[in-house]
Figure 1: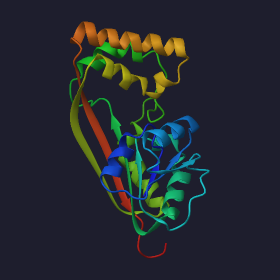
Figure 2: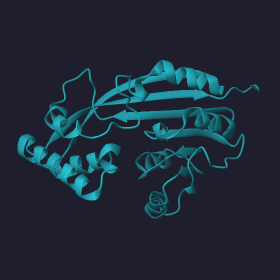
Figure 3: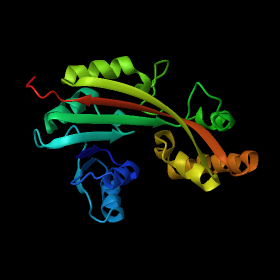
Figure 4: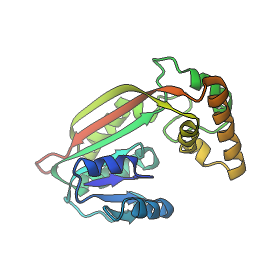
Length: 222
């Protein structure tokens, strides 16, 4: 199995639990790669490179997965790399978990809007355009152009509760906040934590939306 951009390894741990062995992870950040090596006790093989530059073997993997990471990848180049790396009949799964769902109320989002509106958008969000994970037409076109078939898309609506420390840690992973200078980042996170503690009693429940795409490399040659 191949995982693209494992980050801190949340999905990686679950993939290992489900029997992914061996598991190769392509991670562009050397610091995250070092963390994963220690945290997972050498249970995965880590290649330090952006997916676009990684030297992937051809027709090798049964499954490739990207958990809320593919918006960092050049889509055309990345999908071409994964198509080539998968064995004929192999599967691709890529998904994004969005911390909010426009179809359901989100009081914590409303309470923190004034903080987040001052920050640049995430890479998977475009001004005035559908968020990349939800633009199913564009993702379908890109997957077909890369040669994939049996495309399916599923939206999974769910919710989760965090305490004050947990919601602060969650917001620290959001790219608009993570990219800030340290002092600015800490001030933003402190403001988020204060809202959670003062206005929500330290219990924040947010609606979540996971957008999942699956596709298969054909058994026959392209």
